[in-house]
Image (tube, rainbow, N blue to C red; front, side, top):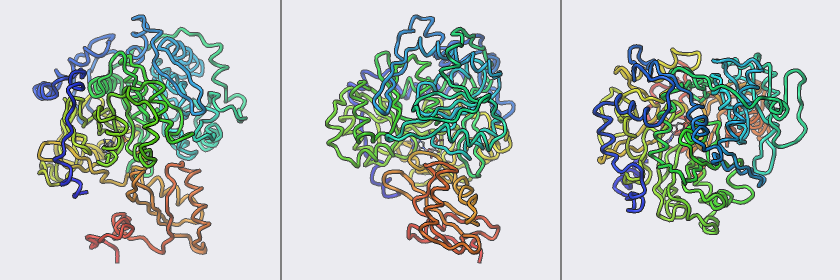
Length: 633
Ligand code: WTA
């Protein structure tokens, strides 16, 4: 990695005159300076410009109970009012909110008016199932428009949603249902992926059987295969929607009322329910999308993520709708039926802004320049990247072959916990391939050593955010102590947020994110905890103990290697390794399947019994093991 730094920190890519002329925000420095002068006034101004309020706030930022910061205290607001109601009232009901492209080639045009009607209806369905303000509805669906309807319907009545990504399997889903104590779940019969059906309803049924709280399941028919419907518990979406009233009231919420929880992986096996609240979240995500991706009336925005991840929550669902944008959603895999499916979608819908993950770029890059060149990509004007560091080679391919050297790449660094972009260029900011550049105006970021001292330009350090920001997580659901210890206790300074990432800031102040410092692995941009995979392995009767590490991979960023100690009497075999892979696929989900499973007689541990994954990694990569003085004899 260090070689990369010396190689590329001096390489600049400047925005063209055309980009500068088109950009809404012309002066990054001025906005950063404005924020630095008075951070509260800066956000208050944007809160007035960007959002409608039912009642004004009394205090912009309440620091009295740090780190349980509160934003826009006393304000009354609704994200559904800002995302739908006000556009309908302004006569924009016929505007397209989403062009939806199904994997098999079917398509739908979703207007703001249609979306609003469906949201009202489903809000009434939820109410009829007894869902009240503050309840958590679990959503386990594919990438169909109804997932957006379900999320917004929750928000409309003041309920929270917990969307569980469709790539998670039954135990992961069951754990999340139990933690949220959901009574109602919304799912689909199945999802299309590479021409095959992912049997979501079957997985949902198995999860409900393992959990204890679900009373009602509403199921969208998408793939059409026969599924089990438990009488008294399960209902079809189309049946309940047929009789639902299209009128519903949008509940006025307090600025700090919860909006949703989203589970993400951390350093223990137990997933963390990251809580986001109403006002600050809406504000930061809509301002960042507006400024960074410069969304305008005639843009076609495509965030090629899954609504089930934070990227989808913020930048497929809420922010584009708040801005009244027109988006594209594609249901399936980038490589189905061919490796040019994405380029077809760009051409078909004249996508002007494409935002995706480096792993997808690297995966498509492998298939050469011919496929993208077969398609007219001239509608593109901006590109974006998220989820992991983008290596300069992939950056350059994306820039030249996809963007025709016209389109700056917005490399956005952020996390489930931050809600929206934290370190990112704006179109007018000169780029360095591989760097997320500089903090968004109003976000105070630094790279520091363990004592909190700023690092020099050749030093790797910890990426910290030194001031609260509007869309920050508010707690870990049901675990405020973990919230404090995990994020706010690493440094002695009050209000310093520890991101878990390491980074470097070069001599121009540009930030280069290196990667996670904790036991979190990014596989194809998806965030997994080593402990989640380990507990999945240990839940198999043959495995006594397991350790999991991430190994760098050209396409997927990282892949998983697993080391297992078998219980006495079990023999290592290729067959057993395959069985364990299938077990993980079933228990945790396909994204968590290790690429390699090795059977070992022992694991390197400290005297206190903590597995030294660092040592395993060094051994796997054939590197020096470093300081092993802590190793148990
Ligand atoms: C990594 C995804 C480098 C980082 C929005 C972070 C990145 C984790 C970038 C959060 C980027 C995200 N450059 N690394 N542009 N964006 N990351 O919660 O390690 O799924 O901590 O949120 O992804 O992953 P999460």
